[in-house]
Each structure stands twice: as structure tokens, then as C-alpha cells.
Image 1 (tube, one colour):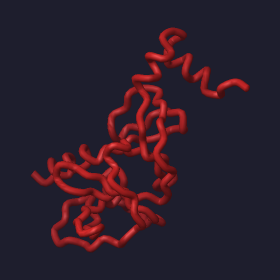
Image 2 (tube, rainbow, N blue to C red):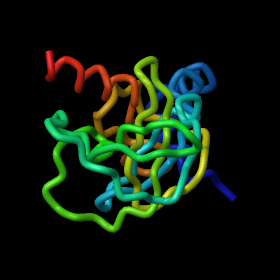
Image 3 (tube, rainbow, N blue to C red):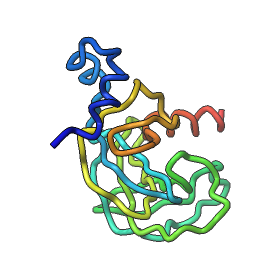
Length: 155
């Protein structure tokens, strides 16, 4: 049986240094789906995946923040969408991915979660960018970058 991704890997390495090339772009990600898109959060950033809770709205909340929930005695700021943008449509959100940051806990909404996998990326991707991977096209979600972006918008 041949590896269906072998041609993809050869194109990445240019026919040389296959092991070195693919090792650079391997990431351990928690894969999840939201709005029909496949997304991945670095596994080391994930603290927990919990059942969805409707967030309590906050007066004068920053755009992109849906509100807060309580999980095991801690407050989690819940994003409106996995990329921190304002969500225009209501989605069938079933999970909340809780990630720890230097500014506290952030909750990323997800319709479904697949689990943690080591994913090969076609190239090194910046957060929020769509990239080809061994799992198909996916977007990397970085909770630390999301919180920094929210902080910059409020400054």
C-alpha cells in the first residue's frame, strides 16, 4: 500500500531532505471544527475541553468577546468565534476549548472536537492563516495571539 501523501511530501522537500523538511512543519494540534472549517490549537495551549455553556454577557465588553463562564472555580473569557472576530451567524456550538494565557483563561467555541494529532503542515503558518496539511486545509488558532489582538484593539 502506498502512502497517499507521499507526493505531497516530495513536493514539500523538493525531492531532498524529506525527514528534515517535514519535521520542521509538524505540530501537535487539538483539531476542531467550527462553521464548516477545520481549525487547530497548539496542544500545549489547551487546558481543557468542556461542554458548551452560554456565556454571561459583560457590559462594555470588547468586540469579539461573547462573555464569561465559570469552569472549576475560574473565570474563562469566551470568544465569539475561534479567530476572535465578531460572529454574525448563530452556530451549533457544543464545546468550549479552554486555553491558558498569561492574561487568564480564554474559551474558544467549537462545534466538534476531533482530538490531539500530530499534523504535517505544507509550510510554517502564522495564526489565522489557512494552510494545507495532512488533515486537509486548516487554520491555526493561537489563543495568546488572540488575547494580544483583543488587548491592542482596546488600547
